Structures are given as structure tokens and as C-alpha cells.
Amino acid sequence: MSQRMKKTLLFGSIGLFLLLTLLVILKLSTPIDTAFSKWMFQFHNPVLTSFFRFITDFGYVKILLVLLVIVLIVFHKYRFSYILPIHVLFVVAINMILKNIIDRPRPMMIRLIDETGFSFPSGHAMVTMVTYGYLIYVVFHYIKQKWLKYTFIGLLITLILLVGISRIYLGVHYLTDVLAGYSISLFYLMTVTKLKIFSLGDKNESMD
Image 1 (cartoon, rainbow, N blue to C red):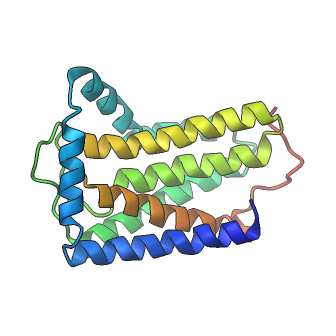
Image 2: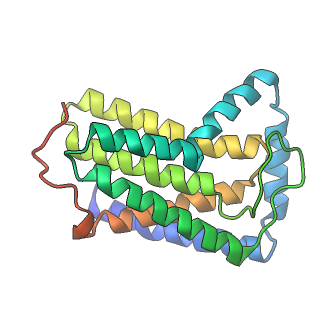
């Protein structure tokens, strides 16, 4: 990725988050959010509901903790296995702070699962972007075989997107909640991965 594209993503992600936050605070996003949620609800059926109930679990902290423990055990020789939990915990804290500042209630329409707390930004979107997004960074760094590298990256991107969609489908978040969660976490990832303290180590190492 070129430096110009990286800068575009960096400033674009924080710019999008700030814009979405302003729209939500001023309640200007409500018509779009409501319309998109209603559009999603027309696809409700038992099969999709079961699928998204399963997918949304990949964004819960308790599931991510299991993943982090597995990563730590399997890849304990690599720096990223110790760095990843730090990022996840930090982003969870950021999400809690932002939710309490912005104080947006969850959707009052159809809910297919029970959730508590505030809505903006989506915690699931934030932690999945950071967790699986950081793993994309790790895969790109360590795996040399292109077919394997891009297979893993494709699967992780798909999982990130599906978790976000699941939150809207299940009626516990608005579109802007999810987009804001993605954008602030992408900004976070692109910032911290440039810090020397979080470097992954020797680029010549390989997991192949």
C-alpha cells in the first residue's frame, strides 16, 4: 500500500468517525439509520437469524478472550501474541468512554437478542476491527505464501464485515454505530502499528 493511500485511510477514518459522531449528536442520522434498519428487517428469517446469532458471538469479549488465550498459547514465541490483548483491552475502554459521552440509546425497533448499555459506537464493530484487523496486519507481516496470506486476509475481512452486519440485522445497533466503530478502530490500528513499542519483530520470520 502506498504512503498516499495510507494517509488517505488514516485521515479518512478519523474524519468519518468525527462526521458520524456529529450527525448522531445532532440527530441528523436518524432518518438514514431508521430506513436502513427497516430495509434489513425485511430479510428476517429463521436461517439468517441463526446465522447472525452465531456470527455476532465473534465480537463478544468472552469469545475474544478465548481467542486471545489460544493465540497466546500457540504463538507465544511471537511478539504479537502479547501485543494483541493490549490493543483489545484498550479499545474496549475507549468504547466504554465514548458510549457514556455520546449517550445514544439503542434502537427501539425489533430486537432479536437482548443487549444493554448505549449504542454509539458499536463495541462489536470496534473490537472486531481491532482484533481481526490486527491479525490481518500480522498475517501480512509473517506469511510469505501469497495464496495463503490473501486467503486468511479475505476470511478475516469477511468476518469483520459480517459481525457488523449482524448487529444491525439483530436490531441492537444502527448503521452509523457500526460505521463509527469500524472507522475509529481503523484509525487506532493505523496509528499504533506505526509505534516502535508495538513492532512485530523481524520481517524475515515466517509462519509458513
